Image 1: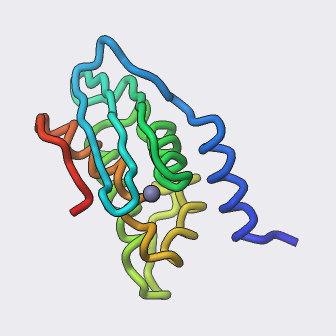
Image 2: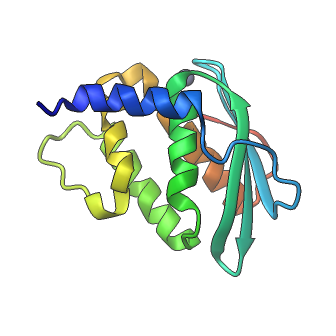
Length: 151
Ligand code: ZN
């Protein structure tokens, strides 16, 4: 029997235990810090952007399992994508987490494995944890120096 909730927990725990693309990047072209005061999640995101392409991405930080798993999966997803596509994925991801309309049509092709994180939408208090990495990505791409918070 396929149980979506089990899969969600398994994937979150796996990424939390061994986050992908975890570590500082010394030749990053863009970086930004994100902070979610509601939970204490903190992360620094590093990007290498070459002519509109995100050729490399990594992150460091501390936080709850959801924030770390979401950051880890985001880095896997956006690596090698253009900024335009990364922005489109973020839009779908935000829709998936924040809209409660059951008939909502999502672009599952864009979301890929991120669909598993739709489980977060059942815990409204954790949505900020799940979306922190993406806000930090936006800020890094836009080249803002200040720390972003989920507020
Ligand atoms: Zn959190």
